[in-house]
Amino acid sequence: MVGPGRPQIVLFGSSIVQYSFGEGGWGATLADIYSRTADIILRGYAGWNSRFALKVLDQVFPKNAIIQPSLVIVYFGGNDSMDPHPSGHGAHVPLSEFTDNMRKIGEHLMSLSNKTRVIFLSPPPMNERQIEVFFGDVMRGRSNELSRPYVEAVLNLCHEIDVKEMGSISQLRQVRLS
Image (cartoon, rainbow, N blue to C red; front, side, top):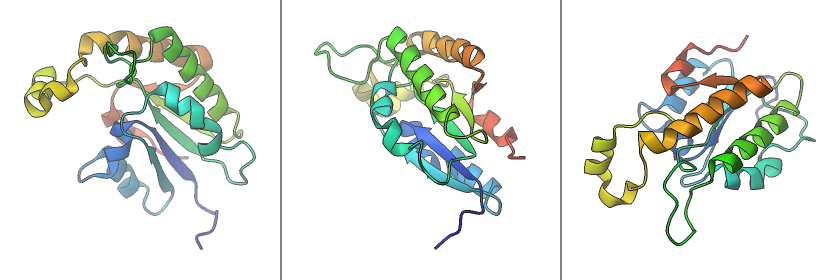
């Protein structure tokens, strides 16, 4: 069994997190950078949004766990910001609910321990044309215009609750544990 001597970095989010350990992915890059100093733990769920995340937050990050993460990198917003599905089902979460959900997620994570740090990733810009060509109608309802208010909400919330925000995944390469 692996002992608790190494810091834990948890990646928590939707498909951008789930698939981050693929070849050349940002999760794989972090695992390589921290290979001898920290354990990278993946908690990514394709298709999820902040509403789903809030429902499992206590199970994924129990407050009474003996070992708490040193860093949690949170990414939600890409699915939340999609156009609402006409049926009322789907991944869309209204902006005000998204902001409340992210606040609750941030506050919960910051309450885990005095050593737990939190970074929110805002929804990244997308190449809409490339997505349309590659995925076709499957990805309809996603656009930079739709995600922009969610990006702004993450930025404002991070200032409000004193959580670090990164506007792009490439900035993660600059993060080092002290």
